[in-house]
Amino acid sequence: MLKRGVERKEIVRALGEVFRAHGYEGASLTLITEATGLGKGSLYHLFPGGKEQMASEVLAEIDAWFELNIYSPLREASDSARAIAAMIAGVDEYFHSGDRICLVGLVALGASRDTFAASVDGYFARWQVALAAVLRRSGLSKGQAQRRAEDALLTIQGALVLARARSDAGIFRRAMSDLTKRLLAPAE
Image (cartoon, rainbow, N blue to C red):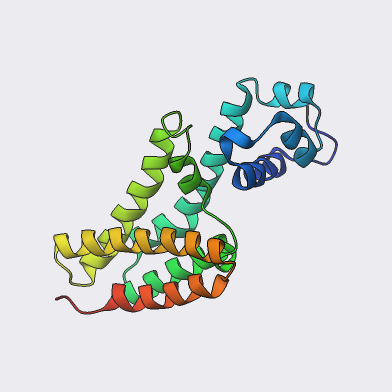
């Protein structure tokens, strides 16, 4: 049972921030109870699968957000330039202009990678496929589109890491500006 006035989505978002700040492995039950305001009993009532279920639900929420705001618009776009601009705007919004790390990327690098391998792979694979599809519609060959889509994900993830490491969100914003130009460049 949720605390009065607290929705499950709010709990899952709070869990996401704990995992983002401490990683899956470092997210102790104490940190989780502090962030959610729920006791251990309430948490296990809501998430009988424990921390693994909590993380799975967080990853599912991230996946749903990206499906709605990134993948689907890319797949459905008829105008490549607008689709890419919308993707970059969505990425900027989600990652708070480079101030927020990628939790999926963090999970991919952690010891829990194998536990969540399908979720992590699906996140990156669907993004790459959707972006490559819009690039194909813009006139790139299949190979060029796939390489540019892969480069885009590399750029986004690398920019997030470097911006965080250097405490300079400007790094992320510049990388996104450059990425837009590279994605829209004519075929080579």
